[in-house]
Length: 181
Image (cartoon, rainbow, N blue to C red; front, top):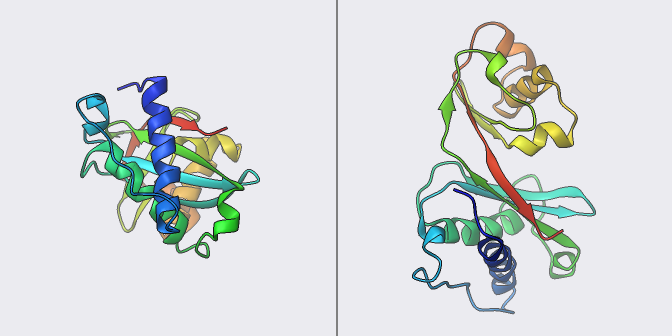
């Protein structure tokens, strides 16, 4: 699924409106699904907040549990207020934050680490811990495939070289990424 420019703009506005609604400055976002049926499709998605280009919060759903529009609305608020790595977003910070949305493709299991394409694939590890790294994590950090796998293991609470011991249960996915910038 590729989103239109209008659909991307709707999702970005809904994400910001969702956060504003938590400050009592806007109504919870709503949409007419008849006009935008694609936004009713069940898709996994993440909302990332960046302040001065640095991560400020990122929350999402890897499993499509509801309409894409609702996933984005919920994830935006969660990224602002429930990411355990950061303090809750203050109202003053909101004006400095840029919103990025990643809409996920279906997951595909891999049989070899050689199948991982930096810049194209995100990784889902579901073994001895669960962790997800979006495709842009590798490119933003100039990771090699090996560094990407090490970061995935660390995020899952495993030691970094765990992936070298055997082929782990990893699935790859791509993401359609767009932002306010």
